[in-house]
Length: 182
Image (cartoon, rainbow, N blue to C red):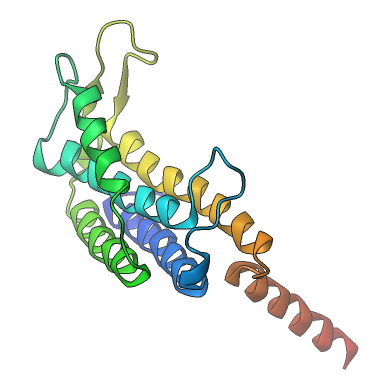
């Protein structure tokens, strides 16, 4: 039987975060103020959002260890997270935030037990769904980052950069084609 546990989740998260950091490194700092349209985040804001969002998951599951969100001041907590992501940061500071937060979160993930991953986390009355497994919520942090990384890859295209994952795939395809030609 195949099993996807804490160590797998941590390894997958590290892969996602390393790809995000690669994008952050490749985009020139003078393009960090670029935004795809007026109502969207800039490159810098998107990267800061990714970094601070993982911090949110870490706070909820590692520090506070919430298993019931009833009565929790989610609005106030999110206001703090959103204020933190709006801080002005240099490219180097953003990359450092991504590295440190990613390492902290991945280390937390790999140390979880099956019992902790199987815990049910309940939400306030009227929420849909009314609960989730902690595993699903933690997996959601990785999925959230991948969603925003897709936005960053589109912004790379808009400023004239071919994303590294695309370049790597193109190189593999070219190598396969060259192998067939010989």
